[in-house]
Image 1 (spheres, rainbow, N blue to C red):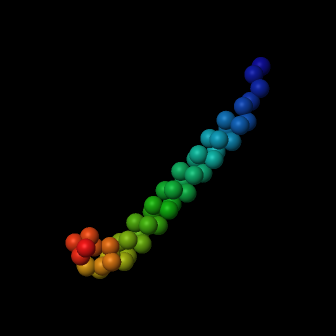
Image 2: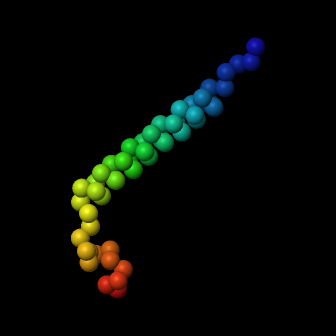
Image 3: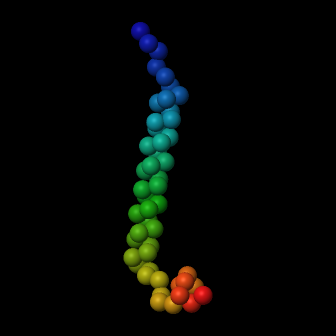
Length: 49
């Protein structure tokens, strides 16, 4: 009988955890952006340079 590869399982768990965190961060960013749209002519406006 083959013995389990715990390091592979750990890596898979870590990847799943990171993906979930990234999705949560992206969702937070989208809600933040939709709640506070940037003002026209703000600091990041490339047309003002």
